[in-house]
Length: 253
Image (cartoon, rainbow, N blue to C red; front, side, top):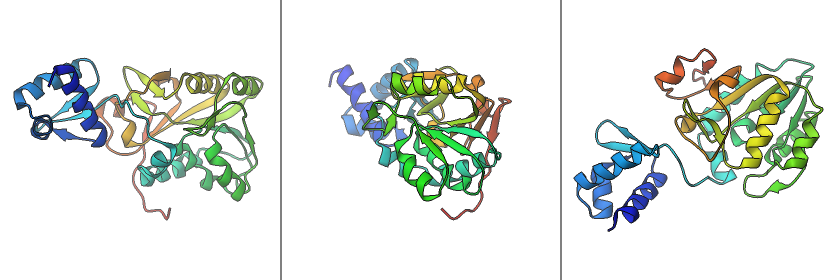
């Protein structure tokens, strides 16, 4: 197997499992462990994977973006706890923006009873907003059919006269070097404009996003007033002043 094909195979294996072991990769590719170690070292130098103790490795850059339904079900306990905490930061009388992601979706049920108005470009949020009777405005524009959000230039034009008290955003990846990143250039541009229009900027991060890099960066970690994290947080994140680590608690989903 030529090196290019072998390394592509290694990445495909790591996309299927969060952590893989050198011995398993050697068996999968019918290659020696020494060769696999050299391949992984090259991938690590390129910033694509992270080597772990015990002869293991995991992806930093995920080439495949999960579907909306996959992301909705993934890490849902963590996302629910993040959403519950984020809602405590919302005060009566505020105009808030909720990003289109599945992590942000878990904020909505905790906003019931608050005197607020929600603005969003997340199509997946509509059912909850309507069912819970929360006053809301949907930003329109070209719909991304895979991810269920509106994020074209028309949508950006619609928010240019809006002034948000707070925005709650997610991302597909977060890292010290590459900042907060997402799947499309249009959503990155839209998120950047939302942050410019917001007094307080709050990022929600579950443990699957740490040290991951998606295609388009829209902010650095320092651009956020608060970063709400849950799960095992890397030490370089934990030391940042704007990081808040959410402790687990029991909650009925």
